[in-house]
Amino acid sequence: MSQPSAPTPDSTSRPAAASGADSGNAWAGGGTLFAGFLLLVDGVLGVIKGVAGIATNDVYAAVNDYVFKFNVTTWGWIHLILGVVLIFVGWGILKGATWARAVGIALVSLNLIANFMWLPYTPIWAIVTIAIDVFIIWALCTDRSRPAF
Image 1 (cartoon, rainbow, N blue to C red):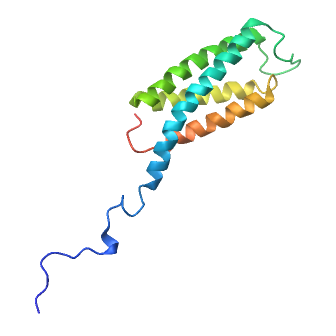
Image 2 (image 1 turned 90 degrees about the vertical axis):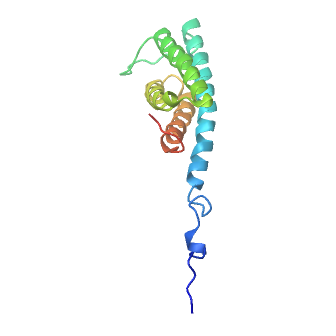
Image 3 (image 1 turned 45 degrees about the vertical axis):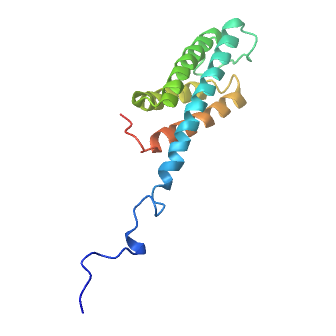
């Protein structure tokens, strides 16, 4: 009886990609691509909110005693600037720039906080933007297919 010199392949020694262990990366990688598009959309929404706030103070409801009360023009500039920067970061993510993921996480976090403080002015619009931001942060944090920093 002679033993074979080379091990025989069996079902337990399959590569990780073939066994489905890499399916999380594919899901997160697709999520990162979608996050890039959502960043573009989030930026455009921020620009629209900003322009509406800068153009006239009558577009948004007046809030009386609110802790984070700025005038609507100030909020407009905040949203406009964040929106323009988010558009550039979204473009960077779609182009595959390594800096864009880290910058995207930081800026989307700021955008989430700004929209939380914006809640009394436009609650539904702010909640939708917060939900988009949470997904973007998740997608950018979970994609391990390329280095984040």
